[in-house]
Every structure is written in structure tokens, then in C-alpha cells.
Length: 317
Image 1 (cartoon, rainbow, N blue to C red):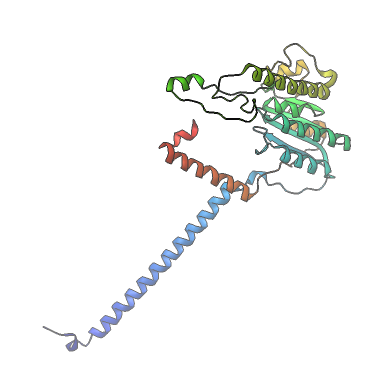
Image 2 (spheres, one colour):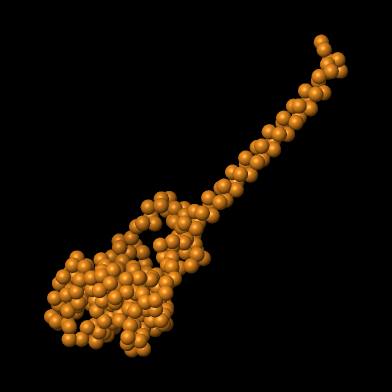
């Protein structure tokens, strides 16, 4: 048998094998390096796509323009349609020297009467401060309750024939679980300091005096709502007994009742009334940190629900 010492080529072959193995190892490292870099880059791009509102970016323009402010979703202190965000957009739009007119595009089922009232008051204040700048409301699908509360402060309200408008009323809803608790043999133990501290507690029998007091509260807020609508719409209203009952009407019906002024879209109002075709969106949007935190919170909540209930469907119930 021939030994390596007797083979003059063995050293050369061994070096070639070592060099080839080293070369292959370097290639593998480079491939994995490229893979991880691409993975990180893809992750960053995905995060940017999720958290950045690319459609909301606007180019700065010189000259006259129409300012657009969106009021979408439930009107509440912690939502996108909060008084803080809407009023911030209003102030920016009114103070911009290039603003020829303002359009509030509303698509909302309503919400907090407090948040709606704060926006209403700010619109009135800004209109008195800047009487040369008109403010119009354009209704998309829905302008109900708190959404119409805000809309009534505008110079004019424009709708689509199929829009839903109205719901001038106030509600307070809850559930009563006393019957279910009795069937299950569950005893409610509620300790309070103050006879009405457990006001309308859903796990206790309904107290008639508390119910009457709640009705008084609702009636007072309803009166405020009606007064705001009458103040904003003035003689255009053609009041009927059902107007302030909480009912809703189509856009076509609302025009006949004086709840709206005519048909129109954002483009038609900007073009025909404000005479400024260029539209800039002044709506206050979440920054990247806020959007990422909200999405992260939602994902964590969904994950926790999955652990607790065993199915992600529980989140939807």
C-alpha cells in the first residue's frame, strides 16, 4: 500500500482540499450575510408600509387652496376623530394664508356629546375670527348623532342622495344580568359609600329613582343638542315632531327637511363654491410611533385573547 510519504502529490492535494474548503466556507458566510441583510431590509419595509400613511402625504403648494379635514369613525377622546385632533386641524387650516375655504368630510355614526360640543364651539369661534373663510360639510355615507352635531356648525351641509343623516337624540345603554345570576346561583356583593354610588349597576336590580335621574340627564343633553342644531341651521330647518326623535333620513329627505342644503362632493364644493381646485388634507394623523404602538398593542391583545380563549375568534365577539 502506498503511503503519503511515497506520493509526491499528496501535499499539493491536501492544500487544494483545504483551500477549496476555505473558499466554500467564505461563500457560505457571504450568502448568509446577504440573506440576513435582505431579511432585515424586508422587515423594515414591512414596518414602514404598516405604520406610514402614504396616502396622507401632501405636496406643499403656493397660492389659494381648499383645506380638507376628515371626521371619520366614532367621535371619542382617544380615537382618530377626537376633538383634539379635529380642532388642531381646524386651527391650522384657518390660520393658513392660502386657505380659500374649508371642507369637513364627515363619515361618522356619532359618539361623545362632549367631544362633539368642543368641536362645534371651535368651529363657531374660528368662523367668527375668520369670517372670510367659509366652512362646508360634505357627508359621505353617514352623518348621525355627534357627527351631525358637528356638521350643524358649518355654513352649508352637502350630502349624497343615499347618505344617512340625523339621529338627533341621546342614548345610554347597558345590560341587566340579575336573572342570569339567579339561575347560576351567583350572589352580587356591592359595597358603596353613598346610596347612589352603584348607579345603574348592571349586576343589581334596576332602581327606579336612578332610572328617572338618568332620564333627566339624557333629556338635558338632548335639549343642548336640539339648541345647537337650531342655532346652526336657523330658519332653514323645517321642524316636525319627528325631527328630534332620533330618527335618521336619506340625503334626499334631509334636504327637504332643512337638515342639509344640497347635493355635493368634496371635488364639486371645492371647484364650484370655494373656487379652489387644489385640495390639501389638514387632518391630524398618527405619527409612526403612535401607529406602531397601536398596532403592537392590538397584536398583543389578540395574542393574549388567543391564550385565554383558545381561539382568535374570541377577539371578534
